Image (cartoon, rainbow, N blue to C red; front, side):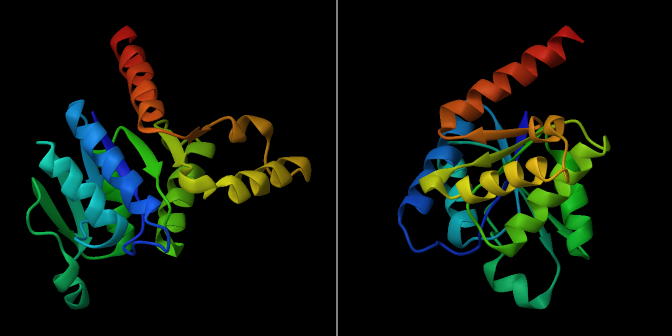
Length: 185
């Protein structure tokens, strides 16, 4: 089981973002769940990776082979895949992962999240898509999704495809459901 983690290459202004990234990375690793992420050594990304690695976990980075990214590429990972474009990065992360969790981040995080959420909505992938609501970060987005439903731009059943996580235990509970479903097939 591997979880794609979408998150920021910056730390954010509140230390809770790094604290919760460390907690999630460590919890996943301690439970034998691999991490697939963007391959950086800084910000929330670096915190998740370092915590999972310190707990003995598998961490797979997928990073673009852009010269300007060399200095932030994490070189101590279990595996590191270089890709030519951001589109290839997203596709490989989807291929390597069994579910997706977006931690707080910026435009890149939102791009990755919306890409996989849209693929879920149109039936192109059926893996769980989650928002990790650290410090109430994703509540405004959830409110906006409710507005999309209310205004007729998104059916309610699409909103039901999205999982809101509040703790690492919520992620473990979802993993357990996915594994149980896979075993029953």
